[in-house]
Length: 315
Image (cartoon, rainbow, N blue to C red; front, side, top):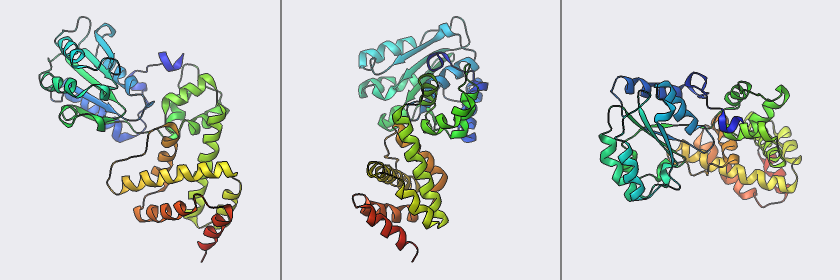
């Protein structure tokens, strides 16, 4: 089962972008030279491979499987739990180079449990590594978060997902790979799940709306208003409602990012689809804000109003 057992070594891990890879390899070099914090925080939306990367890093640094402990902080999160985990940080590796404690969903750890880790993180034994994985690093206490070397994983491009799917032990049929990569919306786990379970109706719906959004911005930026009209006319009323809902979320999240604010877009599967599109096409904050205003006014209007707006773009 690829989702549960396919854990690649670091040389086969698909990083997706050069900046991400450089930051990870800089940490590895720093640990080996005893010049970097041995506490690493991997942040990013669910399904991007944070735990997979943590295990790949363990292998790269010569850690034996028997010296790795993986803890889910959704169920191990109290101050008493933290004290028990801190005690384990003093254990020496038995079979490999390092003893490793991996804390999955570390943001679930309560505040006083995070506080209990502050001094132990600063005094980790030379042969001890602490790796936190979180989908919400902003929910960690600042003092706790600041003690980690932090690396953020962004949603993957379709090209990166295609590369990963082609290199699975049991890859999908070649004519399915591009469709799966699009429906996954940057989520590697979702892509592998679709290889195993197939593309369902909701996935097909995501693909259709995603195609419409990509076409919409392509035609809008190219000034191809006739194609823009045809693109919108092909959507049914229910699909058009989803189109506006996701577009407004895209524009809001993109405007926040371009303006230097936090990304408030919830990182579900559909959100990652539209954020991937935003990264490729939307780069001007004023343009984004103007079209957010226009599309907001059209959200609950009949298609006649949508057509009137498109025609007004020609004037």
